[in-house]
Length: 138
Image (cartoon, rainbow, N blue to C red; front, top):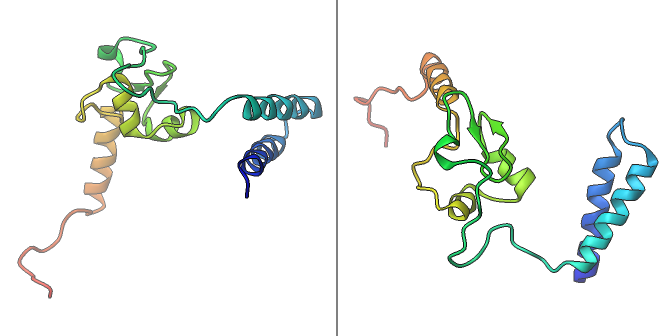
């Protein structure tokens, strides 16, 4: 498959997924197809994460990115309980790329602290993480 075929297949899949929504008009579908097709043919493949020593500018101060109930995306400023899915879907980034793009430490949470505690509590109540350490299986 040529690079052009791969790009056309990608555009087709995106447009088909968008067209499956019940609230989309035919004109919007055509406009999306034209825009995506134009962008795919004009723009070279670009990485969302800058290379080298250049860091992205955060949408809000880094010290305000983590609150008790939300973690805010530094790319767009929106708040979530967890960032992993948003980063991949909206910004095409992995957690490592996100941290590198803003120079964040590895221990910076990408999950809201209250949500993390709640999930840990549910796991403990369900008995996860407990096993009889005196029994050795071979």
